Length: 273
Image (cartoon, rainbow, N blue to C red; front, side, top):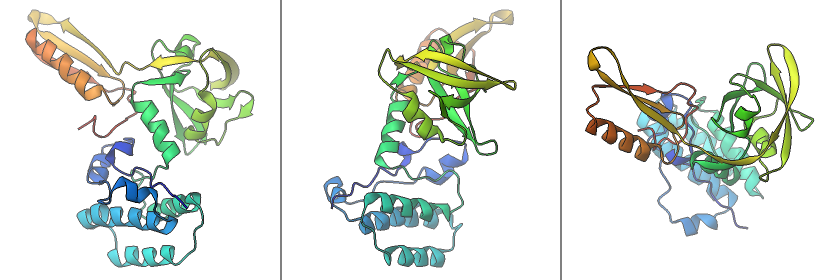
C-alpha cells in the first residue's frame, strides 16, 4: 500500500513560544527522495520519523536517554501496522514520550490546514482559535480585521461553545476549523460565551485575505520619527513585507521602531527568524 510521509520539518510547525526556535529549528527532511517516501510502508514511515528525531533532536540536545529511545524504536517496529492512520498514531505516541509541547507531528490534512492558514488567503469567517487545555474550551485569539467575524461582533477572548448547533466544548481547534470553513456566501451560526452569557452569532462566510502587517510613521516630541509596525501573523509573506516596510521607513529617515506582536498567534518558523 502507498503511505505518504507527512512533511515533518520547520515549515510545518506552528510557533507557540520561543522554545520552538531552539527545539525545532534543526528538524529537516529525510535524505531520501520524495518519490521513495510515497511508496514507503507504515513501518518505514514510523522509522523515518524516529530517525529524524534521533538525528536532529536527541543528539543535538542531549536531554533524552538514547538507550530508551532506541528501545522505543524496537517496540514500535515489532508491531504490525496496516494503515497510514495507525502509523501516524504510533508517531504521535512516540513524540509524547519527549514531553515537549513544541514538538508535534502533522499528517497531510493537518499540514494542508497549516498551509492555508499561513499563505495569507482562506475561506471562512476570519477568526484565529486556540484550545484552552484547562477549561476545554475554544477561545478566540483574535478576529481578523475587516473579516466577517469581526463585522459580526466576535471579540478576542470570546469562547465558542457551539458551531451550527453542535456542542463545541472539548472540541479541538483543528476540528472546529473543519466545521467553520465552508463555501463563500454560506451561513454559519456560532454560539459565543462572553462574561458568563451565551448568544448566537450568524456569520456569512467569505474569502479572507490576511494582511499580516500594519505600519505607519509617528512623529513625537522634538520631531523624532518612530516607525510603528504591527505584525499580526508569521505568514508566508511576512518576511518580505517586513523588509519592504523597513526599507521604506529607512528612506524616510525614521529614528526608532516599535514592533507590535500583540495577539500574534504564531505561524511559520521560517518567517520568524
